[in-house]
Image 1 (cartoon, rainbow, N blue to C red):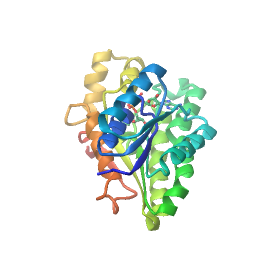
Image 2: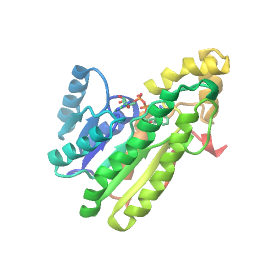
Image 3: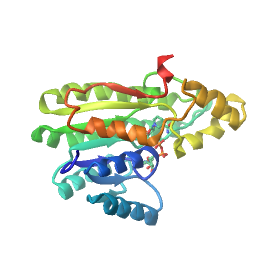
Image 4: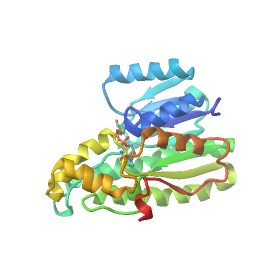
Length: 260
Ligand code: NAD
């Protein structure tokens, strides 16, 4: 379905990004992986994806807080694949803390990685997409792009920003075959969520088990975590041939969370 397409997936060494990269590769796209981690483990994963799905898979370790590295990654993917058709802006971090104690540097890092990096990557990829009259920009936002939770001021602000940015780019790309959409997952069991459980327990004065049951799963009427592979399947659909008229939208995949 995505044969001869080329994709860049930021933050794809773990969690949702890795799942999206694998699903796009399975659908036939060449992939530029990105993200942090153990170099040997990343190389094993890169080789596994290439071998298993018979596509080209490259890796660029660009730090999403560094605009020049982001631009170099998009330029590198364009050189290697001849183009970037699909840009999945996925890299993200979280910090949970009451506003009075929220560290300034965590605010800055969350805005840089979860919001500004999307601006820099999209800006770098957009011109080529417009010229080729095909582009799929898929921003992994969050249910927190639509509703808030306490103690996540930076994350909620960044994710609401992602949605505004997505709508703007959808309008700018509309006449050029370039779509921009946001996927808004509820809780997905990845390292990002696992890491925030102790801090949420502290901020709310709860046990960690209570956080899972009364905060995380309570948010989602299905009472289940969202599965990485389901988020990935939605991304493949948005990248695919039936998505030309889907643009500027926020796709909730949250077990009913924001319907409440
Ligand atoms: P994760 O921690 O498993 O993965 C995050 C990825 O981002 C990793 O590959 C990491 O190396 C990369 N990354 C972090 N900082 C980076 C930087 N400075 N430069 C480059 N790469 C960097 O997290 P995840 O849960 O898979 O989250 C992926 C995205 O999905 C995030 O944008 C997150 O906000 C969003 N999201 C997650 C959930 C959830 O419940 N897990 C829910 C809604 C939205």
